[in-house]
Amino acid sequence: MSRKASDYDESDVRVRPSRRGSRPRSKDRPAHEDAVSGFVIAVDRGRYTVVIPRGPGRKAAPERLVTAMKARELGRKGIVVGDDVDLVGDTSGNPDGLARIVRLTPRRSVLRRSADDTDPVERVIVANADQLVIVSALANPEPRPRLIDRCLVAAYDAGLDPLLVLTKADLKDPTEFLGSYAPLGVPHVVTSTGESGFDGLEALTERLIGRISVFVGHSGVGKSTLVNGLVPDAHRATGIVNDVTGRGRHTSSSAVALRLPGDEGWVIDTPGVRSFGLAHVDLGRIIQHFPDLEAGTTQCPRGCSHDEEECALDAWVASGQAGPAGASRLESLRRLLRARSGEAD
Image (cartoon, rainbow, N blue to C red; front, side, top):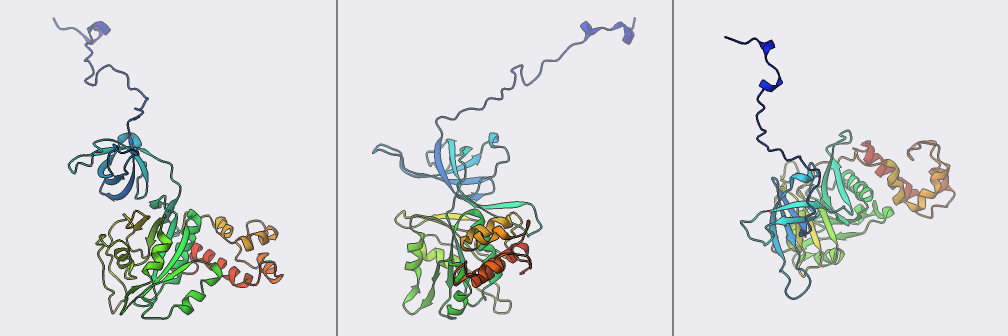
């Protein structure tokens, strides 16, 4: 005799046990107290190359390179070259081993850029650098002042010290070009290739000692050639400049940190850039890097962009309170503001 649906009650229902078990999911995460610290020097398709320094004491493990992946508990946190991280797993340096990055140390600085000035999505290029080395050729290809200005804005915004490096001085005298950046007070190094070899490399090395320096520049300016000169065993690919278009080929496909000889600092080489979007930069922060002008902004109208007729900085400079270089400094400030807003492109 068949039973109707109304004849069943809850005692007739068989509940299948869960395949996942009956243990409640814990929100607690492991402390990873045995984690070791390292420095990310390269990123490639979800794999991170991390250098773990030698520990204190004679019996400490030697410095080694470790390949790692990001632990699930880090979620969507991005990890870039320059990050300080903590690792667990196989941290022995075994080439077939794999460690896990379980913690990301708070960053001291972040160099960012966006695809363009209207793109709200930021891309972190490098973490924890303290110097931005902006490389530009004086000729072949011709310098791009607007790109240099944008890199300067990014350096100021990130709290990095800028350093301008001009290559190929054997092809063109740098005096006139440097004159346009003199009011900014940006330190510079000029390099050239001559009969005596690579001139200017020693002066550049002195600027890099004890620092983490990230190199940026568009293709063909000689950035990878500089890096190979600074770190002879780097073997960064170098390209040539097209005689017709004046453009170079992208020879560095990803950022990589390279140690200077003698363990005296780090150089981070980055791929050549064609643009440097600054959508993430607050215009108000740029003025902070012009202390001789910032005091004059107290009389500016609310919301002043410092590049308009009502701006009080013109009167401040005319009064002489900004010093003898006030006019040229104000023009440099406004040039950077226009670079950020895209008006100068």
